[in-house]
Structures are given as structure tokens and as C-alpha cells.
Length: 164
Image (cartoon, rainbow, N blue to C red; front, side):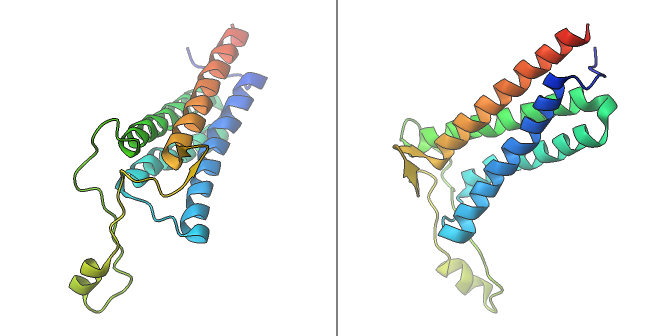
């Protein structure tokens, strides 16, 4: 049963579905470009579901008749980003092994691509570049994304109940 009425809980869920990935991606890009925290391969894996969540949340605003469905899909994408963050944090804390080829490279318009590849820094996935309270960025992504997804699903359930 689709939620067609834009009840207050559905409006709140839409805003969380839009703002959570927007703020998390914004923080990632500020860290990358303002503070020089180069993303590793697994950092990029966490960003991709957030990109999808943003697009789905935008569709929830653009198509109010299907807002519930798009908001739910956005919530699932946010949850996936959080679960990838949990896996990445586990790799950083050495709870389990990550992928062996976990590097990120940039060619930066080099005339000699081979030299650029050889000179590119290797960004390891198993070493956090920054922590706060001993929680890495991947760990924070897990926490914020999971809480946002749970809030979205709870609000959608509340909206469905109110629509009955």
C-alpha cells in the first residue's frame, strides 16, 4: 500500500532522506578538499549509495504521489552506505581483512601516465586517516547513516499508520 498523503511523518522522512546523504557527502568532500583526506577505495564504496539516496530523495520531492516509495528506497540506499561503513570500520580496526587491492590513484593530467601511476600515493583502507573519540570516518558514516535509515523507516511506518 503506497503512502499517498504527505503526512507530517512522511515529510520528515523525506527531509532526512535528502539531508543525511547530502550532509555526509558534503562532510566527505570537505575532508577531502579542505583537509587533504584522500579517499580510499572503500571510502568511495560508501559514497555511491549516498549518491543514489540523494537522487531518490529528490524524486520523492519531485513526485509527491510516490514520495513514500522513493523515500523508502532512499532509506535503503542510506542503510547500505552505513553497512559498507561498518565493514570499512571493521577493516580499519583490524577485526577482519579488507580487499587486497585497496588503493586510490589520481593521474592529474600527467603527460606520462605511467610515471603518474608510479608516483601516486597509495591510500590504505585499513588505516584511518582521521578519528574523533577513536571512531574513524567510516565508523561515523555507519553511525549516522544507520540512525538516519532507522529514523526514515520509523517515520514511514508512522505515516503508513496515519494514512489508514
